[in-house]
Length: 551
Image 1 (cartoon, rainbow, N blue to C red):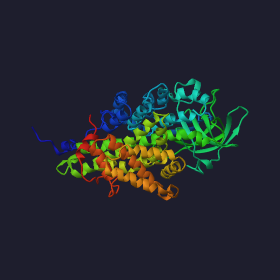
Image 2: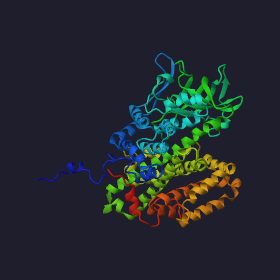
Image 3: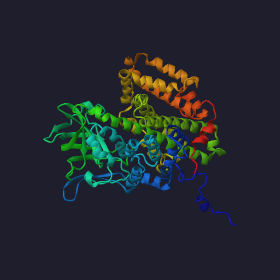
Image 4: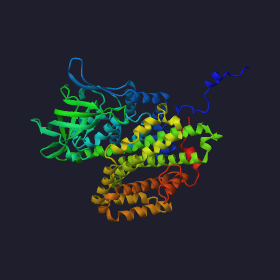
């Protein structure tokens, strides 16, 4: 046998990890399956088996990459000069949407809950968490569709018209009247160029028509994602103040509503999804709720989208962690596998603890939605949603960047998928209120609604006495709360501490001892500097083994 030539040897590639494809995204994630079982049941995990298998295929991975490589394109006019304002998406976007909707990740959970399913929202949260790992951008229209239903309930008649279509498992794209569709998607238009998160400064005007409950809208919206969706919840000023409106893409008689898409945003990430600027000039809207109660009406949609911000960020963390742990398990350097190197074990274990804490908190919040009549759950959801939105979404860019670094230069290359995750990582911290907005919302709730602090104390108190570091962190947080009214300058610190205590309580109660110990000794310890890979001992290898995907 002849020795291979130098040219032939260049074609032989070794010491590269195999593709991370062919695994079940649900069942290979122990933290997820345990959370689904704790807050739901073993049957919930079983129900998500097919979704997990499909999410882990090479085909899903490829569609996710293609949807981001080929960006949506706006066509304002057709060939004859008619204003159409249509956005064209790559076929991979439709592939992802068809399956996301088909798996019941849009508004299906609300109808299942009404039908008596006690774990409808936990199941949907687990599915959204797992399926978003295929590609995060298409989660936006799915999330808004999910979130629209509780807001629509402000008007029984409107809810009955739209909810069955929003809850459908059939993806039906295209600009057509509601009566001609078997499924529909919802969007929202809140912010304006002069105000951003300060929606009470909105200037879009709503003028009453002769038909009761219907208005014409005149103005603009600065950020409206998914402009091809079938209906939008929009805020506009009436004589009675800021109000909420249902704005259909197509009117009941089949004519297109006058809704001009000015341009699509050129964004840092989320590039598969179309985010637009809209102009209204006689656009028809149906009032939802009372005049002057627009914020109160749409706040239920905001709460639901905040939950998906937490789930989406936790999903990004998990996908980044899976890629990093898979790489170091199959890559050798400096005389051995990377995963066997003590410092790399520390980094992966630290990333795993961050990911598991985010997953545990996100699923706990979903469980609260499954108990609508429970006073404690309602109060906990009120305080924990902005806490989790602030903390988990704020931690995501740092965590994804560290996971990318585990792959070295390979992680900086587009084919790895990590640059896509990194570009996406700041989004959820901005959408539905940036960090300051959510931290201040926490203060507002603590000041005006004393029951929310009681709910937080009750929830973290379920782990009292199990870990002295958690106990101390709870006491320190309560001491900080002595003067809530004067805490604005420290609102971020407070929100972070309260969120970390919630995570610690969940991990102490439900996670393996090595995970809870690593979390409490670092995130709740006195010497933690925020740098990943600085865990002070413990069974790091057990944490790494727990988190690495298995084909």
